Amino acid sequence: MAPLLQMLWLLALLRAVVLVPVPAKPWADDEQAWDLSSSELLAPARFALDMYNYGRAAGTRAVLGAVRGRVRRAGRGSLFSLEATMEEPFCNDPLLCLLPVTNKTMLCSFQILDELGKHMLLRRDCGPVNIKATEHGNETFSSFLPLLNEEPLPQDFSVKMTTVFKDFMITYNRTYESREETQWRLTVFTRNMVKAQKIEALDRGTAQYGITKFSDLTEEEFYTIYLNPLLQKKPGSKMSLAKSINDPAPPEWDWRKKGAVTKVKDQGMCGSCWAFSVTGNVEGQWFLNQGTLLSLSEQELLDCDKMDKACLGGMPSNAYTAIKSLGGLETEDDYSYKGYVQACNFSAQKAKVYINDSVELSKNESKMAAWLAQKGPISVAINAFGMQFYRHGIAHPLRPLCSPWLIDHAVLLVGYGNRSNTPYWAIKNSWGSNWGEEGYYYLYRGSGACGVNTMASSAVVN
Image 1 (spheres, rainbow, N blue to C red):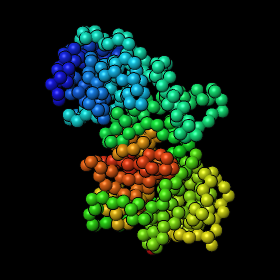
Image 2 (spheres, one colour):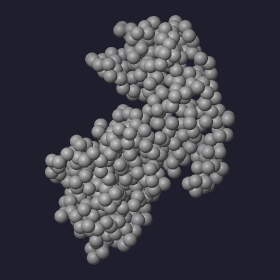
Image 3 (tube, helix red, strand yellow):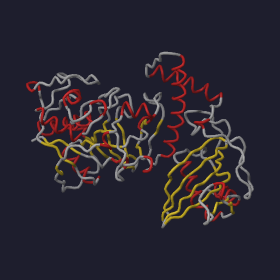
């Protein structure tokens, strides 16, 4: 740590306070006594500052002002709840600042779990303060504004965001029915920009988040329209376990360079990601086994797979069963995508591709990589946390924010590799080429990030 920053830490910790629980009383703010104990606060406070500054360039990092906290112990762990002021360099650019504030002091609350000396950030909320927190250890924070999402935005920031929003409307060809709806969408857009910068600050990879074509949607709208809640709620068809590949995985692999991947498609305003994930896998399997790359019909699955729910979601395992039962898949040219359910119009005479079976793959990511390199692109499901605002880079969200048990989006693994020593999965998405890295998403590889290893599968073509 730099000498200046070390000195700031020491000064801050001299005036820091830690709340020690009173054993005879429940844990509540109004029933606790504050006591000076900077040594116990040192490690979680340092971790909190590191998390706050993560990904920031030199010259833009905040330093700790004052901090206080409380601790609750259970078994081998300690749960710290901290309140801290962060002194930030002045910044007035809404697309670069973490939060759109005109002053330099932020009040943050953190929840940090300490298990045997290893820290994990469970929650972080920050908002602007009007005055600096007191420098006296026996006093408490006295006056601060509520968090941003509960308070009107500063006027100069609102003006800047209006300009940015107008550019967004032009870029993505947005029109709204009334002035009131336009104003509402501006409000949603502004809050989303703040949220995107929070997500970026907490990301442990290299991903950058910001304006995307989904930036004027609320979280609920985005989830309802584009994601697939059935993945975490409904068991699909049972599949046999694939035979493991004994050969070690090559250092990197990319099926796009081998001709096994069709262009990025767009599911539109329909939760049909499951169909795109499966057709992408079958396209790769057919190419590897028959030598021809064909763009296959997702609409056939929406219309004819009666085990799934079309735009309301579905399971890849069910889709494999449907393809096998129907007798194959037509091409996209013969059965074009509409993005809504129609009567089934499948013709066995027009089917160009068939599958013999489907298999579930190992949850071990090294074995997944070895299987991919030898056998082709893999259908997987992930937790889509942060993807609404993803622009580029390797995403590596904190596990509590991107739980592997809350998967809600089906995609296609087409390759893997390393960028600047950061391992990644290359993932083909189905939101068009004007999202992410020309339609692709890059996710950290090796830690089961966002549940990427929980539902890996493939069709079998003999």
